[in-house]
Image 1 (cartoon, rainbow, N blue to C red):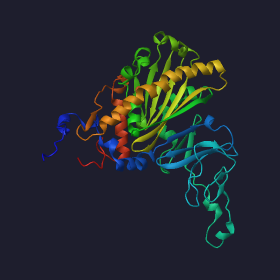
Image 2 (image 1 turned 60 degrees about the vertical axis):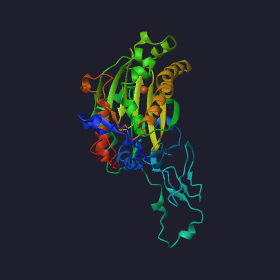
Image 3 (image 1 turned 90 degrees about the vertical axis):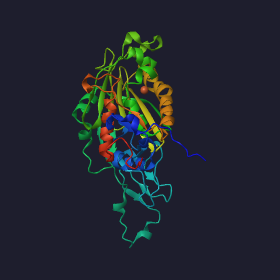
Length: 395
Ligand SMILES: [Fe+2]
């Protein structure tokens, strides 16, 4: 039988293009690389977990996977929000699920019980531990580093990583202050999608301005290209403008109730490394975070924020704008093209894709790829790779 011949598209076709403007398919397909990313990248950055308004009452909690670790944040008796590994110190069972409220944390396996500050309170049959060297005080829940800014709570697995403020950097803090510091905001809607694609395709999509006029009809006409800035530590800010006159009739109300500082249609899409978006579009604020569950499964969660004290009418208007420009646009327009990209990249014969478009960032329009190249620069640093290729790939 004839030998199977692979298609002839090889590295030869991309000769002359510098490595940083290419992405090798192996980064989306390699299980070993996914495991490395969890420890070397996601385990070393600050990951968003929740907003103050997600946990308004004492005992409210929220669980999440961070770099493969089950984590819970919970509001204590003193109203402080603390983060712990969501793992029983007895036999390692996961303690809490999803989100909810409790007066104490009880492990379903042997009913070990912890207080809201993580202290170990109850052990069924505790006398059996006498003379075993076991000390109850040393077996509270293990805390995870938890820091917050403007009501946003982040955790970091790495005990030696810089502080949250240093990780974000002064420019990000300055931009985020409006609206988060100037007006009191709360989550009015939260929605998740489990998307069967690698988490990096989600992160890249957030920085890819080139697709916007083709995939998102509303933004094609009502949101002209605007400048952006690349900032420290892999973060970027895209300034946006909503052209009220070009909004479709059914969305004219998106011009109403602009957040303070964004009157006239201003806004931004802030992409924090590696995978959080903080977005202002005129009359609402949105956070989009993602949890890489496995090589090929990512849970994307979008929170829409309104202003504390909004009446029903204002809330409706903010939700209508968010539905069109942040929820439906993601589900109906971004996800389908990402699924196609996932299918197309799952091959070894057309091995490179291109992130070559370029202009200086400060002059850039939404069509440039320098935000993507910036993302990959930081990915290489964390992962310890010299090109945008899996270090395990032997091509
Ligand atoms: Fe998009």
